[in-house]
Image (cartoon, rainbow over all chains, first blue to last red; front, side, top):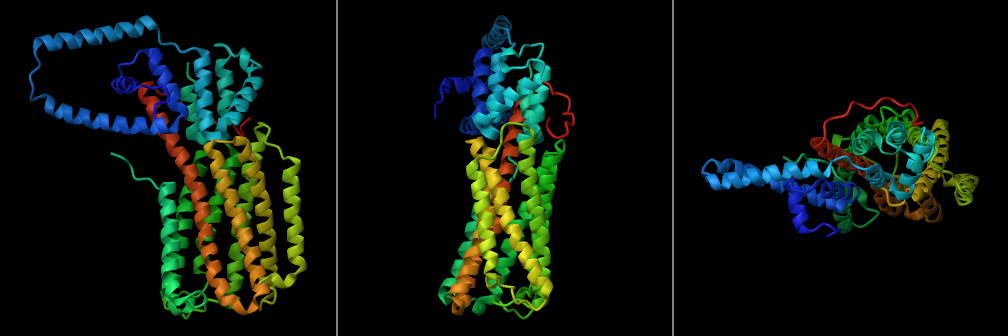
Length: 164
Length: 303
């Protein structure tokens, strides 16, 4: 299984070391790909266990000043990178995520249709004309449809995924 | 820690175990001689039905809660919960060797037959209501879930088959029942079975439009469940009619089909429950990364 995600990217994703754009890409893929999601869950559980064991063992090792400085430098670099790239997702990214979530439940064709119907019933009138201003009413109409197609939990998932 | 969850794999394992044990008990004595091991076979039947319908009841109840904001879907899943609840009583509506009662595996006394059909008709009504409400809920959101000519033709064929079935009134096992009410109830139950099969075809149409979505799998299993029961009624009635002297053999073979039926319903609803579990996992994951949103507002029928 690859799906366009390298082992290195998986590792950095689990460590939270990806850039915002890389993180968005992988998260968007995870929304629609059940096998990758299950793989991610297994890896995350393993990672959590390793962290737990690491926590327990950490006190038994003293950290040198040099290692401490390097660690801090990495933290500052990551904070800087996040701010520099900007974290606001584009509308298209969010639309893709919404489609991916709905596809898991009701297939691609129905997902696209549901989004078109939600847009038509919102002030945007069509999917192509959905803007940041008309996003909320569009999302609310989509959630109303999703409550029938996906149930409450699925609709919540959609709502969180569609958040700008 | 990983929470224990009843998954579709566990349901499949339940089916394999139930039918495997039945085969294991029956094979040495041969089909048609089930009364030799009446106690074991009856205990297995009761236990299997309890497990299957019990799980279906729990799943349906939990899923009904998923649709608190959508009236038709909530009605549908509550009706399916009622169907599973009423069906839970079915294994007990005949003398039970496990309770020390004298057993007649191949005959049912008039009182039990009447009671059995009372429960069957009520359960079938709930099932029919559930399937139709699901279809109506999908139809109402306006995503183009419409019937084609082929669907209408399939439904009409089913109705024609129903008429043909009733022309040969002797096909009904309770055609000459002691109580007239039993015969009437059996006719009602059979009409319901045809209507349930027709309703399941509507859901099958929706599942085709949903393509690869996981909800489509749920609808397909529901269709299989409905058609399986109708198929069993038709095949078993026909077999008894054509081979009247092999009724014990037919009954023993048919029991495999009848005892599989509740598991098919369980499998359908287990698929739906898995979908909710997957959504809950993904939701928890997203929420761990972002601050929480306010709760959803009720929206009526989804419009």
